[in-house]
Amino acid sequence: MGFYDDAVLPRILNAVMGAPYIMAERVKALAAVSGDVLEVGFGSGHNLACYPSTVQRVVAIDPSMLGAKLARKRIASAPFPVECIALEGEKLAAADASFDCVVSTFTLCTMVDPAAALAQMRRVLKPGGRLFFVEHGRAPDPEVRRWQDRLNGFQRVLCGGCNLNRDIEALVRDAGFGFDEIDRYYLAGQPRPFAFMTRGVARPRATAS
Image 1 (cartoon, helix red, strand yellow):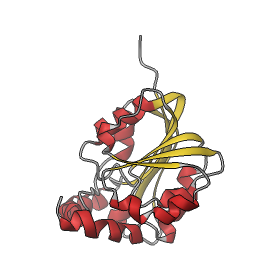
Image 2 (cartoon, one colour):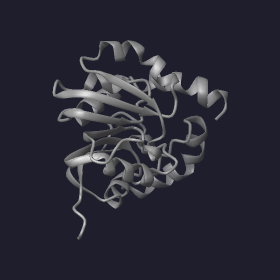
Image 3 (cartoon, one colour):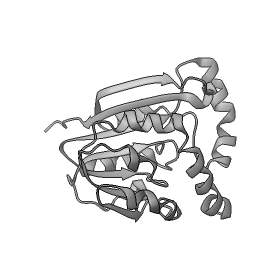
Image 4 (cartoon, one colour):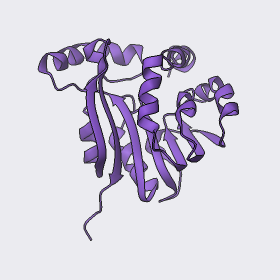
């Protein structure tokens, strides 16, 4: 990673990802999170203000520690302990079945290997544990998809590897999750190639013995 990705982009994302319309999506996505939580893709900690009172602890994973530095005030204000670990989602060091909930918000779009990361999220969930996620991604409308494909290269360069055209629902399902809830929609007032959202709650499907 270069100077832009290491030092400039996290500060840009800190500002952009705290926009009111993004924060509203976080609140909706995290309303039922509880217990011991693993947050994958912590960034600069915008989710901390959106967690309900049922959360007891957050272990925050992100490959960049600059985000944790930018989140110092948010961490200090959190009503629960927050532990920040510089690690990629594909390489979670947590024990099997160790978290009540896993949270991923605006992260699956950027991961180098989202399938591997989702497999790790599935592994660390306790029996009955849930994955909470919200993400932008591949739209259902052909014309919007064409624009997403055209713009994806620019998006990746400007936004640190972020992809416009990943099918988030399929990624989560193919990683062995079943959906308790799933909503797919466009954010009102935003350019459609950037605005198709998938928000859901999922549980690991039982494997055949």
